[in-house]
Image (cartoon, one colour):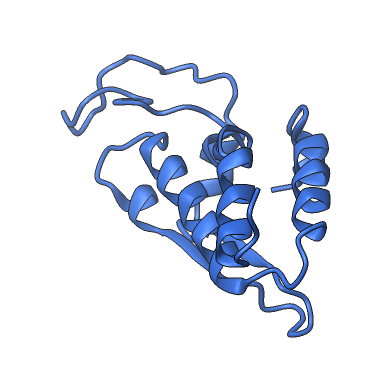
Length: 136
């Protein structure tokens, strides 16, 4: 998922990163806690039929560079990006052929991961600061 494809997400991520960068000696524990907050919120907003997409969620240390403290939050289901970016929701509310609910139900929304970051920005910063023992 390219973050610049989500309206306003670049600004939120830039703001979030600058707020976290201002915290001295930021803690990986706080970052992982923030990632889990985003994961939990996103899992509440994925469309569910069998639960494969919801259960494929993960939060982990970023693997790209050991010197940078960062986490990755995402979904491993092969179709996760397609569902995330499906803004049209053409079948929304229609019964699924499996008989298990309706498309985009029960609380499904497009951009479920990006929206979770936006909804939880303040809580993420608070948790990182808390883990770093910074009084706000």
